[in-house]
Image (tube, rainbow, N blue to C red; front, side):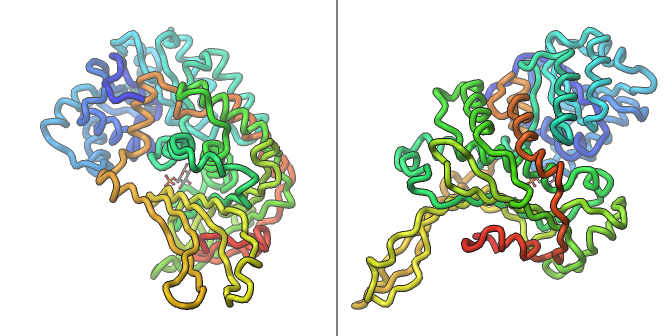
Amino acid sequence: MSLRAPEDQDIVIIGGTGDLARRKLLPALYNLHLEGLLPAQGKIIGYARTGRSDDEFRADAADAVNEFSRTGLDEKAWANFAERLTFISAEQDGFGGVRRSCEQSARLVYLATPPSSFPATVRALAEQDLVEGTRLVVEKPFGEDLASAKALDTALHEVFEESQIFRIDHYLGKETVQNILVFRFGNSIFERVWNRDAIDHVQITVAESIGIEGRGAFYEEVGALRDIIQNHVFQVLSLLTMEPPSSFDPEAIRNDKVKLFHAIQPLDPSGVVRGQYTSGRIGDEHVPGYLEETGVSADSSTETFVALKLHIDNWRWAGVPFFLRTGKHLPRRATEVLISFRDIPVRFFEGTGVQQLPANHLTISIQPDEEITFAFLAKVPGPEIKVKPVRMNFSYGDAFMAQPAPAYERLLHEAMDGDHTLFARGDGVERAWTIVQPVLDAMPPVLPYPAGSWGPPEADELIAPRTWHLR
Ligand code: BG6
């Protein structure tokens, strides 16, 4: 992880006019340019089916930056950036046009297209002699189940070495997610209690107040388990629970992550609750049910919510249940990890009138709040023994007075720099599919929940007698 301009290279965005390019990639590249973190030399080549001139592509990119960049568009900086932008039309020039346009011996090729097009794209890159010197970035979903993930990986590996492939999971680009490793392994006090002896259970929630945002056709094929749990939540889980790697070396970290994935037991469908939102209210707004969304079939059984229980069968975690949950149109946006420590013997307080003793817990708030909080009990001042839960809090904003860079900026820079630390490795992705496959094979029924609620009541039964921290 370095903050220097990467070696000279061209950047090729396959799907250069799509949503991902407009919303994330072009604004991220522009901000890297502002920070001096783009290669000194190299073009940015947009490649897409529809024809456009270079100037039209530049105008589209300017609109995208204006709309989605965290910084406004500065005319002078933009002019320098725009000089790099070039457009190649798939229909007119094909991949031969990409080859002719590339100027550098190194390049980053970003596949911002649906995975079904990946095999043909990598073959075309090979035909044009664009393999050596290429770093290939692929977007999730990496397959839709174990078999298709394996097939996709085989297609990629027919052309590229694993060391050339960068699988993006944008959660790994979030500062608060990266901090999990520093928090665990940079502070001796926490690592000592990070195990089954001290921890009762762990919760990870990725709650979204948004719905499917017009992506009905995409979402119908995917659902919450594949969209969020199998990748984003599993990545967070692995950083939380992996063994200490021997160093911060990318492969050392990835080896221990994959080892952890192998200790996670394949899911038992009876420990999985699937839900689908019906119409309801988010804040003041009335929102339609999932089945009324455009692109969604009237009898769809795709889940927009999932809660599940899993186990990690190793010396550190055996017997500790992990509860994972995600959903669309929940009451608010919040991604949070809760580490709940073991209960204390209540007998200690016998005769004092103290009855309820919430266990110590640590919350790692990933977004939109970026903070870590430790909740413990304190004596209420006064002659009697009365206790009250209190909190110690660390907030990124207060401590560092800085806004972390968006995940895509960080990840694009790391990929151009050839650093794999923040990218998922093929064997880990495959194991993650093995873990969810039993549920894909025997999907539990999908249960309704009103938009604006915390999901079907069955999700509360899943975690009982414990309760969800966010509710
Ligand atoms: C994407 C999913 O990977 O992550 C979306 O496809 C989801 O459905 C998004 O909304 C959430 O990302 P974030 O960074 O807003 O938590």
